[in-house]
Image (cartoon, rainbow, N blue to C red; front, top):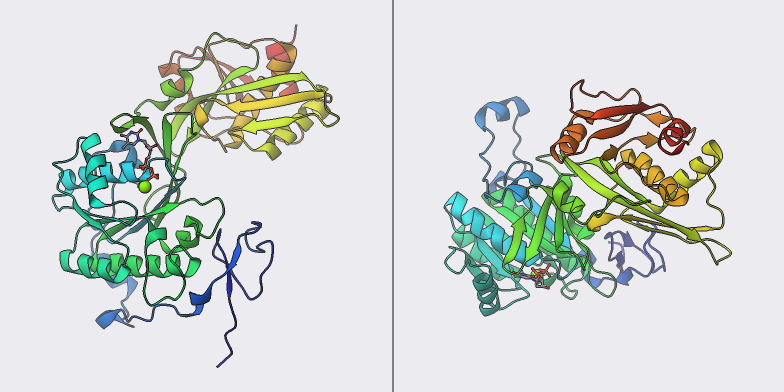
Length: 454
Ligand code: TYD
Ligand code: MG
């Protein structure tokens, strides 16, 4: 048997290394590698009588109809899950500490209890039962049939789950769980992995839907939720800006539905409230049309979403002008600035550029390029675009605009919110009667000529 020296693991991504290093080769994170004593002693439990049994795929499809999903009745949550909770699935809900994960899951537990009949089990390793009761009182859920357990020992938790066989079990949080067959401390990569493995195995064996909460950790000795992403069926992240009351639940991986779906919530004094019309919410902070402000008609997951893109351009006192981005990709901003400079002759040298997506939203769609370019030029020229216009289009390095998918949904959302015109790339499939005046543009230079040309 090979000698086992100390092993090292990355707290960010869970990759294992034979030697310590300042930077993880696998994910590129700095200072995230720690010694992890218990890595080699993985759980060695058998899966029982089903071990090694083979079934023909064709037999499966007839014998086992797709199990019914449980709808919680919280529409934003059900949609992000891909149409409700699937039995025997494992779901990870990650997010910054204090963002509202425990609040969301306590409300979800109550909703599943109402919808599904059987009482969910909520295991908290962070709060005492009395504290959870206080939270439930604040949320108006004291009467909800939820079974609470304040416990961190994985063996005890599994014994409870085996005995009670709930339809839904919530583990808050996976970093506080402690498996006694693993040597290292709670929160280490080995512990988090072992606990997640056992809980996921339980979910598959007993048909319980297991929801794991994972804190996103900035640094320190605690493993992050990415360590268990590959073990679960669905990965959801709960996001939001500290100063804003909006919270986004985003699916980044889903074996049972579309990824990149978002659910929008608002944190109120009595818990999380669903936001059924997020476009109106994200545009609600918009004042009178001003230079540098543009409305992007985007798609997040399967739903259209209108958001305001704001730019500010100011003379720079620095040798290297500042490029500050919130809610968008800074590399993408550099590309758009370069295309504006080379293809349209609009330079930003000597100018500080600030770009902001309003409402704390983070957009990753390439279709936002044209809205960003419009905001930048509008700010630089100090000329406002029409207040009733929405914009979408992807910019290629040549300055040409690429056709965009799902144009119809974008226009429908814009019409619903009272917009009157849209700028879109030539070649995009758009409906003939959307109620909006449509300006088709072939390239960036043509777009700028149309909007800002005198
Ligand atoms: P919490 O669910 O404890 O966050 P997490 O589990 O992700 O760490 O939420 C904590 C924050 O939410 C806290 O700052 C208080 C706030 N909050 C409200 O604003 N309204 C509420 O009804 C509740 C329960 C919490
Ligand atoms: Mg919590």
